[in-house]
Amino acid sequence: MKAIVINGFGGFEVFEKKEIPKPSLISGHVIIRVKATSVNPVDYKIRKFGPPIAPAFPAVLHGDVAGIIEEVADDVAAWKVGDEVFGCVGGVIGTGGALAELILADAKLLGPKPKNLSFEESAVLPLVSITAWEGLFEKGNIQAGNKILITGGAGGVGHIAVQLARWAGARVLATASGKEKQTLALKLGAEAVSGRSEKEIREAALVVFGSEELDLAFDTGGGSGFEIAIALVKRKGKAITINGSGTFNLGQAHSKSLDLAIVFMLIPLLYGEGRAQHGLILKEISRLVENGILRPILDPEIFSWTKIGDAHKKLEEGRTIGKIAVRID
Image: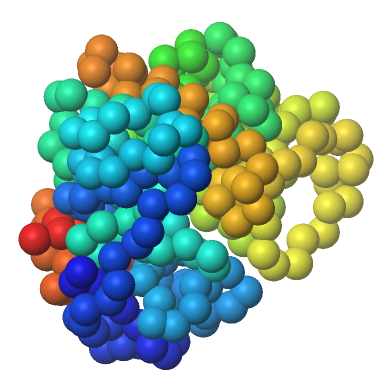
């Protein structure tokens, strides 16, 4: 089968198209005809830096997939040939990736593709939706009426988190840079939007909530964003990030007895733990999409997989609105 592979880590030029063996069906798995994938930061980080979670060379990258099931193992009852599915199923050590005509996928990791979305629209959802769900509901346990901050409210994880939080009845203050992204965050359900500095967020929170202190902050960027989240959350509140890399002084978190949490949604894919939960989350995401509660925002430029280097470059340079979809032609 045809695939886009890398045989070394580095820049946008490392991708090459070649023939590789098609995957063989194994117990508990299905084989999917790939229709689309998306670009997440983890994809370009693996391409650039490699280990410890990179697949072996020739490596096929990208975890998000939307496509049609072509083969089903005998012990899989949940799916049948012809089903349209989506999920985050590979692109890391021990798996194949979605930059290929076919991909082997653990059946437990999949959800039914939303009927009202294209394959490209569906392919941008899995990683960011699962990450947002785990952050808000599993780590954050958000409740109706909670006053929460979501940093990067127009980004990949952020734009899903804003919609999920509003669906749950929380009151959302989002950060975003630039008028276009701020307008998008408001359209998605944020009550207010601000710049990214602590001063701007405090001022916006005081206006919309009547208080600078928040019940929960969900940081989708890491670094200074996580530090600001810690600073703004009330005593015994929650601060959650999806990027815990860096050096942090947790003295303020200690003094306020905060609950701190980090979301790394690739754990089930890397270690085989809790894979069925991802499938359940995606089933609920599909239901929310079909009921008009949740919608993905796609960058206006949809890339062919033969231009995957250009897609990576656009995301790395921060020139996207929403998520980048990639069509497997």
